[in-house]
Length: 240
Length: 328
Image (tube, rainbow over all chains, first blue to last red; front, side, top):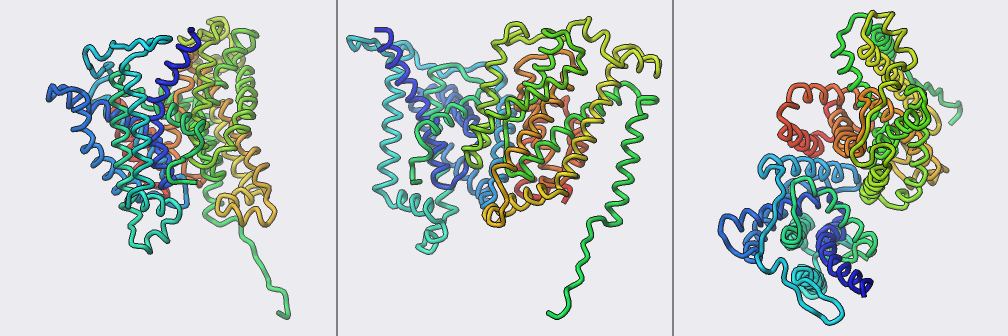
């Protein structure tokens, strides 16, 4: 039954990659911005969660809850003050800005947090597993997968059931017409990037609990996210 | 209209003539420089010239061709490894083995373009990056060339590189210094050759078509520009040249590892930085950019990651506030 075991474990690991990809895809779908710093933002969020855990001694899940609003604000500001200024017909400026941000983040984190491998500890939960008869699966991978499903379901509900989602879809389709209807595309973009950072926080939480991380692993996470997006068809969120 | 309008087309100005003569003077000076320059100056110039060539090539595909590749390290790495393979496995002279680097990069560029050209804009960028990573992982499996830890050029191969003995006699240098002079001359030849080729391309029919494509894709296609053919041409030519530069760089260092040869920071991030601060889509941009970059590197590289952090922030600031670079 090793093939079944491989399949199940692979599927559960896919949940983590789906979390990596959801934030990238959300931003791309709404404003056609490919964030080359996405992987480094995941690592940054993992460090923020770790700092909260160490400072407060709280459970990592609660710590992520505290970190998420701060990272939302960071994402909002990043979009408002930086990315919004370079979005346009020319695709080069946003690419170069996010690439510069990637280099700056990696080295900034290296200075602040050092090159040591870190890990978010969750005690007994790390090695807990359940026996499902044919296969035995870890609680952590199961939680990761469930969270990925929940994140994607929630995003879908936001997109199709709320005024914010309507604004997302309208801006994605046609920013000029959307702004005639009283939507400010710039602030919609800022909220979208803030929301993407919340998803990034969730991804970072599971990344940090699953394996070691250090400031240099961002680009590889970006590549995983990118591959998940490409294989699963580009940007289903908002863009059709 | 009754009479045909008299049209005068000027392609040379006084400034361009002056710049041309200055450039020729500089090339002459560069050729005879090893006669009186110190070894460290020659090494600095080698660094400047190779980075300048890489920057000009990236500027050609991204600035003129609109193809923002983040995978140039694939060509540097494969070029360097092909050179090492030529020396270690085939027993070639390193100078001739550099040509293998160009060929290998060209061959890698064909499947790379085949896949990456299906991706648009920013996805092209990450696509090329992914392909470069895959190439690095494959090369790291090549046990004969050191696998993941890398290898060095054998001493007997570096001892009698063609021309080194002559240079050593000519300038009365030790062999190691003479090798640097040889590498420097080759770098000068590559840099001048690359810039002359790009200049010639831009003045030709194809160059005009390339500029038209970058400015307005649809309009260019509507007057009969074959976009696909041009992109292939530019991408493959730039890849082959990048492979030559990579092989030359690793002939000079004589030591290689997959992480260094396929480093996205060294061969793509630095190169993009040079082009962006100098002014993208201009032939003189990379020249200015490489001088600024070298100045920053010499002054601040002791600060390690703070220095790289600052480079990233400067690149962002240039894009936000001075889109044309310092050269504008």
